[in-house]
Image (cartoon, rainbow, N blue to C red; front, side, top):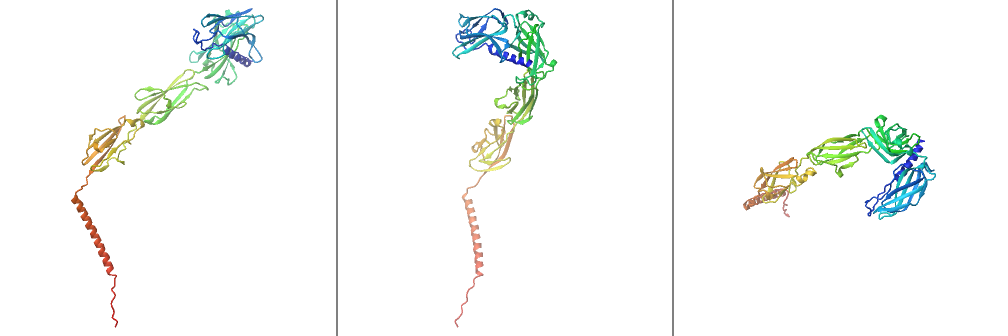
Amino acid sequence: MVRGFVSSALVLSFLLLTTNLVPTSSSADSKFGDREFIDFDDVDGTHFVENLTLNGSMTFDGYNHSWSIIDLFDLDASDSPKLLLSGQYLDAIIPVEEGLWKWSLNVNLSGINCTCQIIISSTYDNELAENSVYMSSLIVYLGDLNHHPFIIQDSFSSEKIDGSNHSIVFTVTTPPDAEGDVMSLTNEGYFLSSNYCQAPSNICLDNMLPVDLSYTLTGDTLSIFIDQEELLIDDGFWQFYFSIKDRFLRESNFVSSKIVLDITPPSVILTSQSDILESESFLVYAYVDDNYIGSQLSLTWTITDPSGDSRGLLEEESYHNSTIELVLDQSGDWDVQILVRDSANFLVIKNITISVENVIPVIDLNIDGFSISQGDELFVTDESSWLLNASTSFDSNNDMETLQFEWYFDGMKLDKSGPILFDNDIELVDTCEIKLVIYDDDLSSDNLSFTLSVNQISQDDSSSKVIIFIGSGFFAFILLIGLIIYARRDSTSIEVPKWKSKN
C-alpha cells in the first residue's frame, strides 16, 4: 500500500515540477530584462468556495491562453491527477505599463470540492523561439470538502547541521479549518510519516524501511531532522519519503528527497618513488575510498618545488583518475600534496616528499672526429688545422641548454666559452696541457685533461739526399748478393761436353 501511494506521489511530484515553472527567455522590449513569466497575486493554499477569482501578471501579451484545474488527490486510471475543469481563455488581459500586463480569471465552482492545482499557460511567439509555452501553477482549496495538507515538492531544501545531523525543509499548505493549528510552535495535531531506502542511483536497493524522525511544523514550514549516528545509518545516498496527517487523519501527498549521509572522512593513501633523477618521468598514486557507492570525490593536487613555489597540476600531468605523471626538472626535495573532498564536505590532505637527484654532466670530446679520453697524448702536425668539439656532451634534458664550458691552456683559463675550441684559439708551439670543465645549473661538473703536441717534420734537402743514398745503396747491395748466389748455384750444375777424335 505504501509503495503504491509513493508511486502515485512521485507522479504528482513530477507533475508539479513540470508545471510550477518560472520560464526564462529573451524579451528585449521589457523593462524586466530577460525574465518572461506568468505570476499569481494569490498564494498557495488560498480557499475558494462558490467562485474562483484569480488575478496575476505577465511580462508578455501572449495568445492561446488556457487554464486547467486538476484534483491532486483523485487519480485517474494512469495514476495522474484527474482533470476537473479547463478553458481556453482568460477573462481579461490589461496592459499596465511597458512590458507588463495584468490578467484575471473567474470560474464557477459549483459542485467542486478538492485540494486542487490550477495551471495557467500561454503560447508566445518571440524572436528566439516559436510557440514558446509558459506555465505557472497554484495550490488552492475549492469548496468545503476533500481538503488535505499538501507538501510542495519544489520547496525542498536540506542542510547539514553538524557532523551527523541533517535538516530537510518543505513548505506545507494546510486546509482552511486547520490554519490556526500550524501557527503554533508545536506539532500538536500533525503526524509525520517517514520511510527511507538506500538509493545511489535514484532507485532503492532494498525495500523501504519506516523511521521515526523528529520534526517541527511552524507556520507553513515543515522541518525534519535526521541524526545519522542515532539512527545507525551507514554512509551513502539515501532516499527519504515523507507525508503528514492532520488531526482529522487527512493525509498529505508523499514527497521525496535524496540526501547524502556521511560521517566518515575518506581514506587516502599517497604513494610514489621517494628518490628519482632530475627530468625522470615517474607516477604518483592516490588510493581514495569513501566507503560507499556513488561517493562524489574531488581531488586537488598541489606541487611545491624546492624553493617553496607552489602550483597546480598541469594538463599533461593528469595520467589516469587518481594517478598523476610528473617530470621534475630541479634537484632537491619536492612536496606533492593531494586534497580530497567528499560529498559531505569532509577534507583530507596527504603529502609525500620526492627527493630529486641532480644528473651530473658528462663530457664527450673529440678532435676531428676522433674521441679523446682522460690523459690522452695527442699529436698534430705543424701548421695543420683542427678543432676540439664537445657539443655532444650530455646531461638531463632540462640542463642541456644551460651547460657552461670552460677551457684551460696549461692551467690558464681561456677567454673562450662554448663547446668548440679551434686551432687558432690557442698558440700551440710544442707540448701543452688542455683541460675542459663543464657545469650544469646546480654547479655539478665533469672535466677532461689531455696533452697536445706538435710533431715537427724537417724538410732539409741534405737529409733527404742522405736518406735516399742510404736507401739506394742498401737496395743495390741486396741485389748484388742475390745475383752472386744465383750465379754460383748455376755453375755447379753445367757440364761442358768433351771433343772426341775420329780416329
